[in-house]
Image (cartoon, rainbow, N blue to C red; front, side):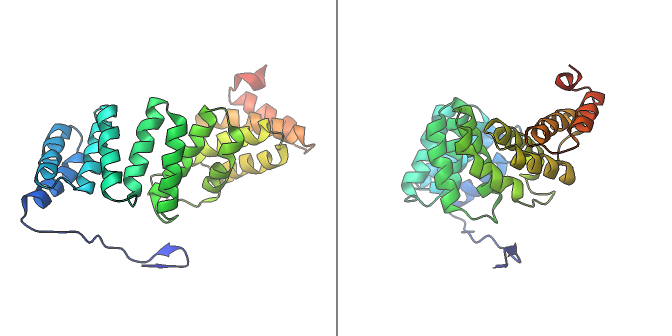
Length: 244
């Protein structure tokens, strides 16, 4: 239940029967979230699949466990089976397959699946923003900074709450987006992004020297005052490029 972009209430509706496939899946899903119990989770999820071979959720969770175990080819198989069974209506499986391809360096394939995950989810879901962040990272790895700009811009504008899994990446994305803007001759916009990062205090102290250095470069490039002071602050924080 939502109103004006806020989640008011949510419930998970799913089968709760004594059937072996259901119980095995629920057990496997629970175990998949417990560190060190991946083998047990794998066994339970495989049992669910044996009992019901078109169990899309079981394939998706087993793909996740295979990902944790670095069985990447097996993870790709499981995620693809989940996608095929669910008739292209499973954004978690698309995200999982994209994540595996990202780790394996198959960035173009990952971008395709991250894009589908974005289309199938909504901005109220953390997975939507995980997909945008990693899709942008794929573009950067392909030396396509302009392709990454929209996803980074939207991510930086989002007001994540501290308990959102995307919250911890705000500083990293701000820093990368600012650098991309600076490198693509958009210093004015870069200044705004770097200043936004400082206002939100989302960049770790150990990286603030680097942030101030790039802020100073952006200010200087677009003729804004204060860049000398930012260079001095960056140097006082030990950022080597500013000291030089």
